[in-house]
Length: 80
Image 1: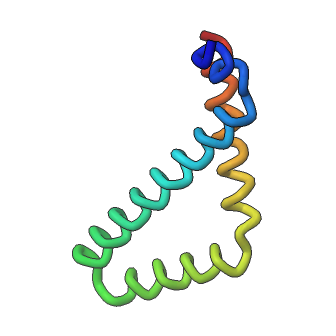
Image 2: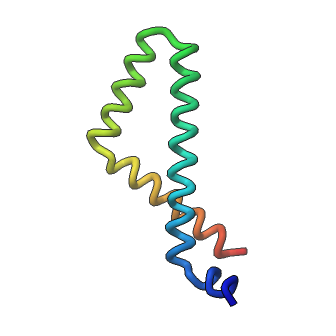
């Protein structure tokens, strides 16, 4: 009965998936930034820092991309 209730709770599944995706993206971002800092000269590091700062100042494009990715994933999962 609990398994059926879990499957029926789409909002909870969606929130969990968003949180998992958010965490995964954050981990990958940190990993890529670390690799980029190790392999890049100072100019590229400054550019990456500026891009990160812009994303923090204006998170709307990032939120739109995350929403699109979430909608895409939900659409893919619902077709199965």
